[in-house]
Image (cartoon, rainbow, N blue to C red; front, side):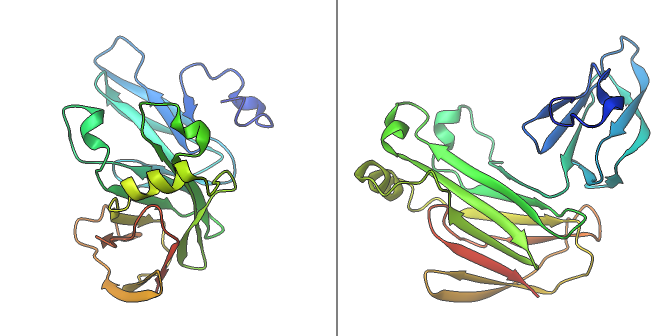
Length: 226
């Protein structure tokens, strides 16, 4: 924790809580008691969202949670975009062409950012540019996908792009909205279409779900919320 938040001296003695990257905070149950109370210190002037319920907690603050040994508390940092694959497979190899889900955890200033990265997972071809890395940015109620500065237009990149041409985003969840929105306008490769937003199955009123925006991970696109 102290590496990610070096100015917050109260976190220096924290032994159990740890960060996965800069976007995810993990708080495991480490006491031998079956039922226990865990004090969670939320750092920085930012929102933190429970990964399961999307309940928001504002830092810096401390909250107590009742858990058991099977519980691991996980919180997403406000201002982050987190990309997942959520289809259950018997091996990671079977997931190579699976679609992605994108979670946008809106920060206190109304923005969020993150990256999507994927390569073949087997070879060193990424050294020749055979990977997809996208900068995902949410601002002004608009999510955009653009290539990262590490993306080079090499033949290896073009070959890998063709292999992944049909891999899409199957679900987009925006968490921490201040106003209830009605639709998303999706623009990709000069084609624009509208998708009605769904609040069915949402963890709370502060989030919305775009079901199958069908944008492709290797292309430039944007999604405007209105």
